[in-house]
Length: 438
Image (cartoon, rainbow, N blue to C red; front, side, top):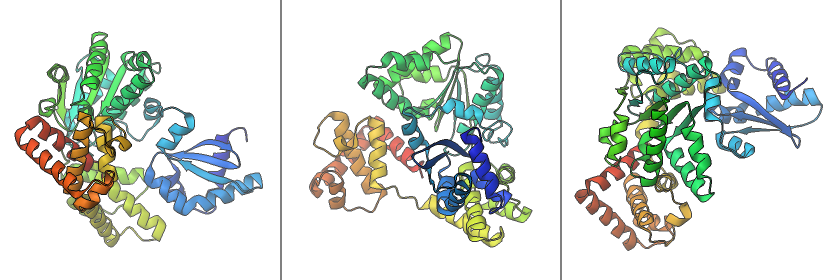
């Protein structure tokens, strides 16, 4: 064997003696080998569901195969995105990963009346960057395929021009990276990364609204790329006119090109998505089962994928047949998960810290800076609204503050929301984005 990839190929070949071909394809298709060091064989899987399943059910098979190959016991570690970034000491190369993947392409995107315009515009941009629609602004609720279109654009652009400098970033990550560059004195490197792109793809651009320094930086980045004839594609959960915290100069620029929306898919489109996703996962679904799913799983594409993954788990982990009872159970589980999502206080605090670019220990401390106080009070308000914690328990989340302090924060947020529409929009935006993480 000449490389680690050869070792992994050999492992998969040995697994065929223990597992079915469908099982191997389903659970290991996104696994990549990273390294072998200190008696450990290190893999990477970006799909958290598959990573957890492999660790729970299939790790012993991988270890046994490695022992056959090397005649010694090796530990097996599977890294997620964050762990892989830490291993390399840098952020994952998102554009490269997108372009190398055949999962999110135009060919795998199911087109229907609800997304036909967005699909056509994305294809046009991919095939003729900066010729027709610049910027292209795609908006719609979470889980409807906006990110899929960004990946598909990157895939085509890289295939047509391998030398293309494609930069993909999420709105909140743009802010976090800007803050790091300022702290580390790397402003020039930060600006070069984005302003020298030939194609800039920004997911969830709404996250930069209300952040003056981020908006200032993105304004100049946008101008530089636009004037150089480089393509910009943005996605958001709402159109620019509904982002009350977005600066007017950015709002007008976002509206310069073409704005298209994606809506929840109709029954026929949901049915087509189900059949397409099932085929990609190696699942044969009878028509009555597909119809049942299309009638009951109606929110978005992500919910459909989650239900299919649940069905796969029943089949592979429990040995259940893909029958109406199993599908009904998966649908019930998915709808229950969607309807009863309750974020933990840590999730709420973590998101607000990212929104205001402050550290968790600071928001829990005694600092009285304006943004910190706002973030702290909003966090208390949302924890009270979105969880079952008492005032005293909320106080414990913020350095053992007493319940009267928490009550004062709740009253202040509620009063400001009634008198300050811009502030109310901030709270609404934060609430929506926390709920979208379920």
